[in-house]
Image (tube, rainbow, N blue to C red):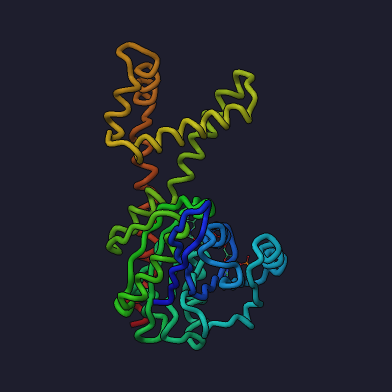
Length: 298
Ligand SMILES: NC(=O)C1=CN([C@@H]2O[C@H](COP(=O)(O)OP(=O)(O)OC[C@H]3O[C@@H](n4cnc5c(N)ncnc54)[C@H](OP(=O)(O)O)[C@@H]3O)[C@@H](O)[C@H]2O)C=CC1
Ligand SMILES: O=C(O)[C@@H]1CCC=N1
């Protein structure tokens, strides 16, 4: 295991801290890559100089990330693949095939290729990389940046038990990790990968009501965020289900009952379900398009 256990003295107490020794590469320097790198560095378990990132062309973006986090960057053509323990692919799914084919000659067998791209299957990755290359499919969300992601991982056939643990260890620096079967990945994406956007959309709409009533936007924003945070913590920290918790808020003939009735009348529940299913089905669609390509080229 490329891992050290360090003893740290804090306030007279001795605590055990894991220091991750992996070398981590990122192809893609967009929103998701930044959130992941920020989460890793902020966790203090991975130091900025263990991370190296490149993108397709945007040099300004690389300088910005270098300055913001102290991590390493490289030009795409000078990117050092060989020493990496894990290489995250964080570009759009449409760029997957080109990127996989372009990195193929540079990889060493010791590097786990971990894609965060929605809808890109393990089978597709394995088909475009050298035989036996370890591949992992990961679905984080942007809350990785504050160590609060709900991240899924599914491993390919060539990943060893030790590599699986190492990847999990890296992902744990960004939040919770759920090892799932690959056929659960589309729905996971619909719930947790895309999920933060639904809550932001809800907050935007809560803010609209506040705005129309002439309330200070920042105040409403804080109220909404604290309310969502409190509700989430009630679920995570307690033993009541969301249904039980909802009932405890709802007095007969009270304000919540009126609010929930309006939600129900306006298709609120159905809309939430459809949002998740819509995202999941888009993930499945991307995967199927590539499966067609696989059939044609095999
Ligand atoms: N955003 C999110 O919440 C989540 C996103 N994902 C997945 O993460 C991936 C990235 O999304 P996101 O960060 O939002 O996208 P962005 O558009 O913000 O970033 C895409 C990045 O990919 C780079 N890129 C494109 N082609 C190449 C290439 N050939 N070699 C190296 N880098 C390349 C771009 O570089 P340049 O700017 O130079 O062109 C850019 O840095 C997607 O596949 C998405 O499915 C997964 C979970 C959540
Ligand atoms: O919108 C997308 O396709 C990506 C995948 C999950 C979240 N964002």
